[in-house]
Image 1 (cartoon, rainbow, N blue to C red):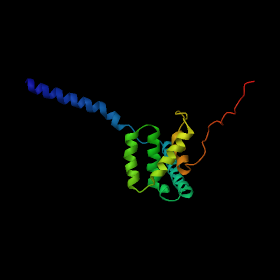
Image 2: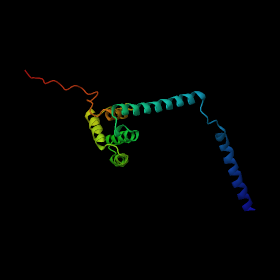
Image 3: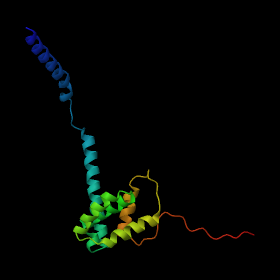
Length: 155
């Protein structure tokens, strides 16, 4: 008799759990039409931005540094180096070399980034935009830095 009560109690507890979970499963998980349109427009904008970045690199650089795989991996390596994630940067650098991308371009881009100095880490997408700017033009002058102070004399 004790065993049948235990089975009944277990079955009742399981049914109660399913009963409680059913309203959660019945809720509508689809996004509203306005949200779908906004997310699709955002995705289309991101895709177009990437295509434009690749086209800009091809136009300005030419050669293997402008290849999409070199551009993507190279910018990633430089960003990781800037954030002091050397282990991951070196793993990406192995892939970069395996694709036949120019190693000197990583050095020139990182040099350009270091010359620009620190920036506001709270600013959105600042590191990525700086890395891309240095990638397509590593010999560019520093951007956003103050001019050298003029010498003063004490009289």
